[in-house]
Image 1: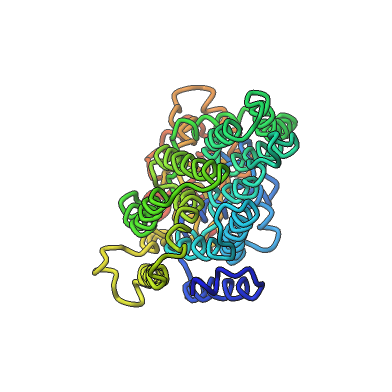
Image 2 (image 1 turned 135 degrees about the horizontal axis):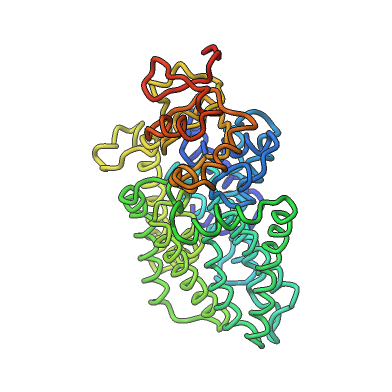
Length: 475
């Protein structure tokens, strides 16, 4: 199997894609339940498609480009979940092939072929967490796309345009998921070990990083959304208030990382045991070690629960695993090891179908999907607002106000004793009041007392905590 994929013939790429589809399509065909991060993206896309502006008409910390993509996908159809899944698969495939191309072109290892892409796609199939289109997965794609620009073009140092492009793509990645800005540290390290003039080169990298932010800030300035951009995206994400809130529990993430971690440890041990190669190959190895450290820092910053966290470790993991597949005295050892990794991925991926969930002590990711709330089943296709953190009612209904993220909504609903907060709530409800209010925090009586012109129009229903506009007929 290894010898087959060590060839650069196009037929190997075709077989690789078939293997990827064989690993993923059965589960995608059976259906993967909707995850919280996807519900959030669907709601944002729905609002943006309806003419709302991010951070002005939608209070959420999602990065601008990730939200804009959700709005664009809404043009295809109403909540096109199938398109989200297809795009996630396409992005992972692009990452694997692009990273494989960079390794081959830079002669990082003496053996070329599609082994790197094989390992990348194989380990990315370990969990359904990477089957969803998360902002982290989207931003990581731009990091992989800009990786070749971090490598030197000649012995004299960098070409200025390549450095600017590398910084630009890191900036675009951060506009998809802000913590990815930490990869500027990786760019700084690449400049130090590769560039002739480190200070000037890093300034070029930094200018490239700031350019997309300048463009986005200009757009928000002209749409009167710049204060919201700082209040609802930059400040909360940097403070860690909402980062990674929609992901799998940390203990489950760590268990899913056991197999990739074992491959990484074996690859690292093998890489240090082999005599060093060319100077460039040693520097590239150091670059991958720094990548691994930055990925660890990012995972720690988000509590290790951000959706798609595994994708951060895939490039260094793939690189160091290549040392395991090199020729050795016992040619059968790498082959058996690769087959063992394939078998382990299949067992973990299909543990439910194989009735091994309890044996492995690995709950299915679907247990943490968004499930319909039985008490709100009578609400179908309605415009509503949930006064609380439970987003399940939005599964079959539409968001009618800017208050999507409840933590961010505390800027208003958490300060109802202040005039400014009362004014903002009244302004956001005046244009299009939702038909239903789901009060999980007992705020409606206070709102009816302080803003009677708006909330006095709501009456209680037979379901506790649910209010509807008077003279509205429940469908």
